[in-house]
Image (cartoon, rainbow, N blue to C red; front, side, top):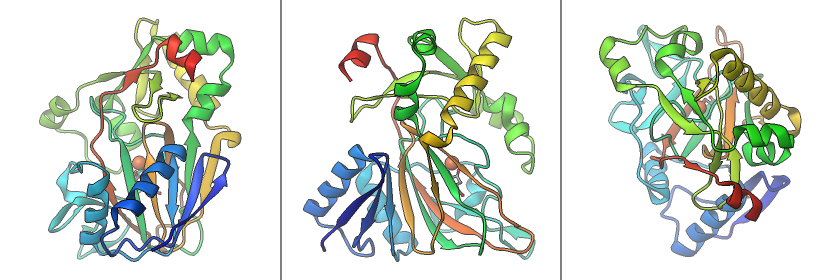
Length: 290
Ligand SMILES: O=C(O)CCC(=O)C(=O)O
Ligand SMILES: [Fe+2]
């Protein structure tokens, strides 16, 4: 197997051609993929054919896998695969409908957010259903100096409990037990990546307050940071083809699914999700070094 790795938007993303993920990937090729993935936050594998077992086997080499909860959206027999789908069979949803229709990174509302996600397109609508990705290293580096000095050393509060009904209006309300399992968490707004050493702006749709700031001021800053990060200059829009599989790094990117006519079209994706690490606060020193 020979890989062809082509940057598609500066350093932010790269397209990977020639990866046969249906077979065990040898160590040298795997090392090449890992190197590319430190340099480019998003890898778009093209023309992939994988069974759930093969997707799980490849993902597991990248790190320990996370089992998504609630379990009901995971593939029967393969809890490592989270299904994003609008398909219903006999009144039962095959996967989560309208997942991620707002800028976020996976697991940002948990104490240990997910390091990465690997989403594989199985069935797509003829139009719509693209995924947008935002480069949060680029956003951090481009922040005006006064905003950057405001956020250095600060943490945002991310709350599933307070925002669940806003972001998941189609899902049932959280039970008291689920609420206890998803307490509010605090993460640094400037996050140092454990592998690249680079700093990203770490913010997303579950952020609701800034620690140590009056509530209104904190909310205004969150809105300003989100609007800044969502500018087209930091974004890559992926128009999916069946057989695409995207590996993204949740520590330095955000993403959002875009709408499609889900009354008449079908969209089904399989996602594996990597466990993560406690976000590291970037120090002003490491910012200078970067
Ligand atoms: O369906 C998509 O394009 C992305 C959904 C999402 O946010 C995810 O799978 O993490
Ligand atoms: Fe997501």
